[in-house]
Image (cartoon, rainbow, N blue to C red):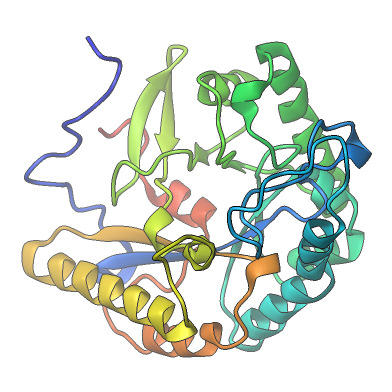
Length: 296
Protein backbone atom coordinates (compact mmCIF):
# COMPACT_ATOMS: atom_id res chain seq x y z
CA UNK A 1 0.00 0.00 0.00
CA UNK A 2 1.32 3.43 -0.96
CA UNK A 3 -1.25 5.62 0.79
CA UNK A 4 -1.95 7.24 -2.59
CA UNK A 5 -4.85 6.98 -5.04
CA UNK A 6 -3.40 6.74 -8.54
CA UNK A 7 -6.68 5.57 -10.10
CA UNK A 8 -9.31 8.17 -9.24
CA UNK A 9 -12.45 8.08 -11.36
CA UNK A 10 -10.67 6.26 -14.17
CA UNK A 11 -11.92 6.09 -17.73
CA UNK A 12 -15.53 7.02 -16.92
CA UNK A 13 -15.71 10.00 -14.54
CA UNK A 14 -19.16 10.61 -13.06
CA UNK A 15 -21.51 13.32 -14.24
CA UNK A 16 -21.82 15.75 -11.29
CA UNK A 17 -25.02 17.15 -12.84
CA UNK A 18 -24.14 20.79 -12.50
CA UNK A 19 -27.22 23.02 -12.36
CA UNK A 20 -29.03 23.82 -15.62
CA UNK A 21 -27.15 21.12 -17.50
CA UNK A 22 -23.85 23.01 -17.29
CA UNK A 23 -20.79 21.14 -18.56
CA UNK A 24 -18.19 23.01 -16.52
CA UNK A 25 -18.10 24.73 -13.12
CA UNK A 26 -15.72 27.67 -13.04
CA UNK A 27 -14.41 29.11 -9.78
CA UNK A 28 -12.39 32.33 -9.63
CA UNK A 29 -9.99 32.47 -6.70
CA UNK A 30 -7.98 35.28 -5.11
CA UNK A 31 -5.17 34.26 -2.77
CA UNK A 32 -4.88 36.96 -0.11
CA UNK A 33 -1.52 36.61 1.69
CA UNK A 34 -0.15 40.14 2.16
CA UNK A 35 1.03 40.58 5.74
CA UNK A 36 1.31 36.86 6.42
CA UNK A 37 4.57 36.22 4.57
CA UNK A 38 7.98 35.63 6.11
CA UNK A 39 9.84 38.56 7.65
CA UNK A 40 12.18 38.94 10.62
CA UNK A 41 9.57 41.38 11.96
CA UNK A 42 7.55 38.25 12.84
CA UNK A 43 10.53 36.44 14.33
CA UNK A 44 11.20 34.49 11.12
CA UNK A 45 14.85 33.61 10.46
CA UNK A 46 14.70 34.89 6.87
CA UNK A 47 12.83 37.28 4.63
CA UNK A 48 10.25 36.07 2.08
CA UNK A 49 11.79 34.70 -1.11
CA UNK A 50 8.81 32.87 -2.64
CA UNK A 51 6.67 34.24 -5.47
CA UNK A 52 7.61 37.88 -5.66
CA UNK A 53 8.87 39.93 -8.58
CA UNK A 54 12.60 39.28 -8.11
CA UNK A 55 12.69 35.71 -9.36
CA UNK A 56 15.11 33.31 -7.62
CA UNK A 57 16.38 36.01 -5.27
CA UNK A 58 17.75 34.33 -2.13
CA UNK A 59 16.14 35.21 1.21
CA UNK A 60 17.96 37.60 3.48
CA UNK A 61 19.05 35.78 6.63
CA UNK A 62 18.29 37.67 9.81
CA UNK A 63 17.45 40.85 7.89
CA UNK A 64 14.32 42.31 6.37
CA UNK A 65 14.00 42.53 2.60
CA UNK A 66 12.25 45.85 2.19
CA UNK A 67 11.85 45.36 -1.56
CA UNK A 68 10.01 42.07 -1.06
CA UNK A 69 7.89 43.53 1.72
CA UNK A 70 6.84 46.45 -0.45
CA UNK A 71 5.85 44.07 -3.27
CA UNK A 72 3.47 42.31 -0.91
CA UNK A 73 2.22 45.68 0.38
CA UNK A 74 1.31 46.57 -3.21
CA UNK A 75 -1.08 43.65 -3.14
CA UNK A 76 -3.05 44.81 -0.12
CA UNK A 77 -2.85 48.52 -0.96
CA UNK A 78 -3.55 48.41 -4.71
CA UNK A 79 -3.82 44.96 -6.31
CA UNK A 80 -6.69 43.77 -4.13
CA UNK A 81 -8.78 46.82 -4.90
CA UNK A 82 -8.27 46.42 -8.64
CA UNK A 83 -9.54 42.84 -8.46
CA UNK A 84 -12.44 44.03 -6.29
CA UNK A 85 -13.44 46.75 -8.76
CA UNK A 86 -13.35 44.42 -11.76
CA UNK A 87 -15.23 41.53 -10.20
CA UNK A 88 -17.90 43.65 -8.55
CA UNK A 89 -18.40 45.65 -11.76
CA UNK A 90 -19.23 42.39 -13.57
CA UNK A 91 -21.12 40.84 -10.61
CA UNK A 92 -18.80 37.83 -10.61
CA UNK A 93 -18.57 35.68 -7.48
CA UNK A 94 -15.14 34.96 -6.05
CA UNK A 95 -13.57 32.68 -3.48
CA UNK A 96 -10.84 34.33 -1.42
CA UNK A 97 -8.24 32.03 0.12
CA UNK A 98 -7.32 34.38 2.95
CA UNK A 99 -4.35 34.09 5.27
CA UNK A 100 -5.73 34.86 8.72
CA UNK A 101 -2.97 37.22 9.81
CA UNK A 102 -3.10 39.07 6.50
CA UNK A 103 -6.86 39.59 6.73
CA UNK A 104 -6.58 40.69 10.34
CA UNK A 105 -4.25 43.49 9.25
CA UNK A 106 -6.57 44.91 6.59
CA UNK A 107 -10.09 45.10 8.01
CA UNK A 108 -11.26 47.27 5.11
CA UNK A 109 -10.41 44.52 2.63
CA UNK A 110 -12.21 41.95 4.77
CA UNK A 111 -15.34 44.10 4.89
CA UNK A 112 -15.19 44.62 1.12
CA UNK A 113 -15.03 40.85 0.55
CA UNK A 114 -18.10 40.29 2.72
CA UNK A 115 -20.02 43.22 1.22
CA UNK A 116 -19.35 41.80 -2.27
CA UNK A 117 -20.86 38.48 -1.20
CA UNK A 118 -17.61 36.58 -1.74
CA UNK A 119 -16.72 33.36 0.01
CA UNK A 120 -13.77 33.82 2.37
CA UNK A 121 -12.01 30.49 2.89
CA UNK A 122 -8.97 29.90 5.07
CA UNK A 123 -5.45 29.91 3.67
CA UNK A 124 -3.83 29.25 7.04
CA UNK A 125 -2.72 31.68 9.74
CA UNK A 126 0.58 32.58 8.03
CA UNK A 127 1.75 32.20 4.45
CA UNK A 128 4.60 29.84 5.30
CA UNK A 129 5.62 26.23 4.70
CA UNK A 130 3.72 24.20 7.27
CA UNK A 131 5.98 21.20 6.78
CA UNK A 132 8.44 23.13 8.96
CA UNK A 133 6.07 23.36 11.95
CA UNK A 134 5.27 20.82 14.62
CA UNK A 135 1.81 19.27 14.59
CA UNK A 136 0.82 21.12 17.75
CA UNK A 137 1.93 24.45 16.32
CA UNK A 138 0.08 23.83 13.06
CA UNK A 139 -3.06 22.95 15.04
CA UNK A 140 -2.78 26.28 16.88
CA UNK A 141 -2.35 28.11 13.58
CA UNK A 142 -5.50 26.46 12.18
CA UNK A 143 -7.51 27.72 15.14
CA UNK A 144 -6.01 31.21 14.94
CA UNK A 145 -6.84 31.39 11.23
CA UNK A 146 -10.47 30.44 11.87
CA UNK A 147 -10.79 32.98 14.67
CA UNK A 148 -9.21 35.77 12.58
CA UNK A 149 -11.52 35.24 9.61
CA UNK A 150 -14.58 34.93 11.82
CA UNK A 151 -13.64 38.14 13.61
CA UNK A 152 -12.86 40.08 10.41
CA UNK A 153 -15.76 38.79 8.30
CA UNK A 154 -18.42 37.89 10.83
CA UNK A 155 -18.68 34.34 9.48
CA UNK A 156 -16.64 31.20 10.01
CA UNK A 157 -14.80 29.83 6.96
CA UNK A 158 -16.10 26.54 5.55
CA UNK A 159 -13.31 26.02 2.99
CA UNK A 160 -9.60 25.42 3.50
CA UNK A 161 -6.50 25.71 1.31
CA UNK A 162 -3.06 25.83 2.93
CA UNK A 163 -1.02 25.46 -0.24
CA UNK A 164 2.26 24.62 1.47
CA UNK A 165 1.02 21.73 3.59
CA UNK A 166 2.48 19.30 6.07
CA UNK A 167 1.61 15.61 6.03
CA UNK A 168 -0.81 16.34 8.88
CA UNK A 169 -2.69 19.33 7.42
CA UNK A 170 -5.79 17.59 6.08
CA UNK A 171 -6.21 15.42 9.16
CA UNK A 172 -5.88 18.46 11.45
CA UNK A 173 -8.45 20.39 9.40
CA UNK A 174 -10.91 17.49 9.54
CA UNK A 175 -10.31 16.99 13.27
CA UNK A 176 -10.98 20.69 13.86
CA UNK A 177 -14.32 20.26 12.09
CA UNK A 178 -16.73 22.73 10.53
CA UNK A 179 -15.30 22.58 7.01
CA UNK A 180 -17.24 21.59 3.89
CA UNK A 181 -14.12 21.01 1.81
CA UNK A 182 -10.43 21.61 1.34
CA UNK A 183 -8.55 22.33 -1.88
CA UNK A 184 -5.11 21.02 -0.91
CA UNK A 185 -4.94 18.72 -3.91
CA UNK A 186 -4.14 18.99 -7.61
CA UNK A 187 -5.14 15.41 -8.38
CA UNK A 188 -8.33 15.71 -10.42
CA UNK A 189 -10.71 17.89 -12.42
CA UNK A 190 -13.75 16.94 -10.33
CA UNK A 191 -14.40 17.08 -6.60
CA UNK A 192 -13.83 13.76 -4.85
CA UNK A 193 -14.32 12.24 -1.42
CA UNK A 194 -11.66 10.79 0.87
CA UNK A 195 -11.84 9.16 4.27
CA UNK A 196 -9.93 11.08 6.93
CA UNK A 197 -9.88 10.07 10.58
CA UNK A 198 -12.95 7.91 10.00
CA UNK A 199 -14.96 10.69 8.33
CA UNK A 200 -15.96 11.39 4.73
CA UNK A 201 -14.27 14.58 3.58
CA UNK A 202 -14.70 16.47 0.30
CA UNK A 203 -11.74 17.64 -1.75
CA UNK A 204 -12.23 20.28 -4.47
CA UNK A 205 -8.95 20.15 -6.40
CA UNK A 206 -7.06 23.37 -6.99
CA UNK A 207 -6.20 24.04 -10.64
CA UNK A 208 -2.59 25.12 -10.17
CA UNK A 209 -1.84 25.29 -13.89
CA UNK A 210 -4.47 28.06 -14.24
CA UNK A 211 -2.70 30.26 -11.70
CA UNK A 212 -0.88 33.51 -12.37
CA UNK A 213 2.10 32.48 -10.25
CA UNK A 214 3.54 31.28 -13.56
CA UNK A 215 4.42 34.89 -14.32
CA UNK A 216 7.09 34.44 -11.66
CA UNK A 217 8.45 31.12 -12.91
CA UNK A 218 11.13 30.59 -15.56
CA UNK A 219 9.48 29.65 -18.87
CA UNK A 220 6.11 30.64 -17.47
CA UNK A 221 3.66 33.30 -18.64
CA UNK A 222 5.28 36.49 -19.95
CA UNK A 223 2.33 38.65 -21.02
CA UNK A 224 -1.36 38.80 -20.06
CA UNK A 225 -2.13 37.35 -23.48
CA UNK A 226 -0.10 34.23 -22.58
CA UNK A 227 -2.20 33.74 -19.47
CA UNK A 228 -5.47 34.48 -21.25
CA UNK A 229 -4.71 32.09 -24.13
CA UNK A 230 -3.97 29.26 -21.70
CA UNK A 231 -7.15 29.91 -19.72
CA UNK A 232 -9.33 30.10 -22.83
CA UNK A 233 -7.83 26.93 -24.31
CA UNK A 234 -8.29 25.06 -21.03
CA UNK A 235 -11.86 26.29 -20.66
CA UNK A 236 -12.78 25.34 -24.23
CA UNK A 237 -11.18 21.89 -23.93
CA UNK A 238 -13.01 21.02 -20.71
CA UNK A 239 -16.32 22.37 -21.95
CA UNK A 240 -16.01 20.39 -25.19
CA UNK A 241 -15.27 17.20 -23.24
CA UNK A 242 -18.24 17.86 -21.00
CA UNK A 243 -20.55 18.19 -23.98
CA UNK A 244 -19.21 15.34 -26.11
CA UNK A 245 -18.24 12.81 -23.45
CA UNK A 246 -20.58 13.84 -20.62
CA UNK A 247 -17.57 14.29 -18.36
CA UNK A 248 -18.18 17.70 -16.77
CA UNK A 249 -15.30 19.33 -14.94
CA UNK A 250 -14.42 22.05 -12.50
CA UNK A 251 -11.66 24.57 -13.00
CA UNK A 252 -10.41 27.25 -10.65
CA UNK A 253 -8.51 30.23 -11.99
CA UNK A 254 -6.38 31.93 -9.36
CA UNK A 255 -4.62 35.24 -8.95
CA UNK A 256 -2.46 36.78 -6.25
CA UNK A 257 -3.03 40.42 -5.31
CA UNK A 258 0.65 41.47 -5.38
CA UNK A 259 1.11 39.91 -8.79
CA UNK A 260 -2.08 41.28 -10.36
CA UNK A 261 -1.49 41.89 -14.06
CA UNK A 262 -3.14 45.11 -15.14
CA UNK A 263 -4.88 43.83 -18.26
CA UNK A 264 -6.18 40.30 -17.78
CA UNK A 265 -9.53 40.08 -15.94
CA UNK A 266 -11.98 41.79 -18.37
CA UNK A 267 -10.90 39.67 -21.33
CA UNK A 268 -11.03 36.49 -19.30
CA UNK A 269 -14.44 37.38 -17.95
CA UNK A 270 -15.93 38.10 -21.37
CA UNK A 271 -15.03 34.66 -22.70
CA UNK A 272 -16.29 32.77 -19.65
CA UNK A 273 -19.55 34.56 -19.03
CA UNK A 274 -20.40 34.70 -22.72
CA UNK A 275 -20.17 30.93 -23.04
CA UNK A 276 -23.22 28.67 -22.71
CA UNK A 277 -23.05 25.30 -20.95
CA UNK A 278 -21.15 26.48 -17.91
CA UNK A 279 -22.10 26.85 -14.28
CA UNK A 280 -21.49 30.56 -13.91
CA UNK A 281 -18.32 31.21 -11.97
CA UNK A 282 -19.44 29.57 -8.76
CA UNK A 283 -17.70 30.01 -5.45
CA UNK A 284 -16.04 26.87 -4.10
CA UNK A 285 -18.51 26.51 -1.23
CA UNK A 286 -21.36 26.41 -3.78
CA UNK A 287 -19.61 23.57 -5.61
CA UNK A 288 -19.15 21.80 -2.28
CA UNK A 289 -22.84 22.07 -1.42
CA UNK A 290 -23.76 20.62 -4.82
CA UNK A 291 -21.47 17.55 -4.54
CA UNK A 292 -23.37 14.55 -3.11
CA UNK A 293 -22.01 13.46 0.26
CA UNK A 294 -19.95 10.31 0.33
CA UNK A 295 -19.77 9.82 -3.45
CA UNK A 296 -16.46 8.44 -4.67
